[in-house]
Length: 417
Ligand code: MN
Image (cartoon, rainbow, N blue to C red; front, side, top):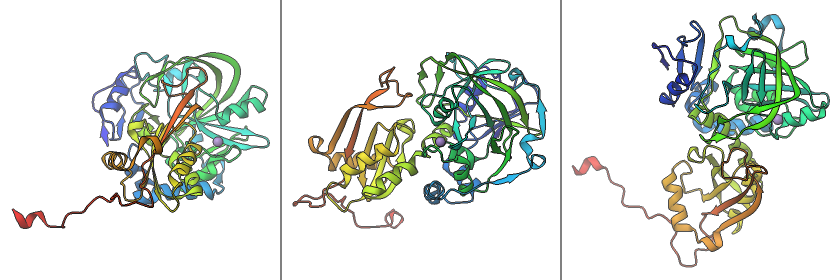
């Protein structure tokens, strides 16, 4: 961890510092405008840091996520007096919080690490990440756009009381980034990943008891401009009319730390992209034997995936393409490889494309698909996109061709110099 000794401004500078230290956690008590405020960024910026927190190995991470999604469990409910997040109250004034302005042409200062928790009478709870632009002392505009929260608001008649947390434990953050069916409370996934304590607010909403901050408020019918904002793809997302939330109460730990999640940086990529790997894995594994999924950082950890399979039937590669798109709706390009290819090595994947693909037979192109609202190349209004799947697996029947990478005689370099 790097602890800053030089003050940095909330306006652009702090984001610049987080970017310069990308890959390494940063902590500071030297926010230029707010002496004493504690801020952390790049907190969970590597898979290793997440594994260390969860007490598991790198190889166990995706299986642990898959098992948590498939076997959710109830978190431990604690009393308000035992919930650190309720230790202190503060006036509802967002200008008193170290909320950064990330990129020059952003529309304002943004909450980037906030998870919104909402409740529906029949569907139960939903937890999801939403970026929020500050538009007043007690008002933010929330990017809601086609998410479960959107459905919850519609079911409630257009307005909804919600809570959101900043500085939540990693099991809760990862679970909230998972795309599971509506009605599945993400806190139950978090609890299966690692023990989670929740506390019930007066509104009945249950939030992580060990978060740094909890905000309560109402998503109103009022619309305001949201954006521009540099998001996961590191390009400016367009301005949209989105719903305004009025914040009515702010509580926090006695000595709270603000969590900055720098858009497009490694922590954002890991938190947003990695939880798509288990859902892709689950879908592919229904149609073929899946050996691994990598949502690649070069593809913004969102739009590209490499999927490994152990082929048993000739059309397994093609079936895996369709399944991968079903497992992550925003996925745009996917490469299916055999299990002798290292899905984490771009060169190894390219080698498979180079030696095992004939474009007229092995490339699937789908037109007019529903794409990602974050993809600048998709249709700006409908998000329509084309998708491409590359089946880079070798045929089961080689017909006299050689697809194996030849191995040289194994020697020790030291013996020859
Ligand atoms: Mn959900």
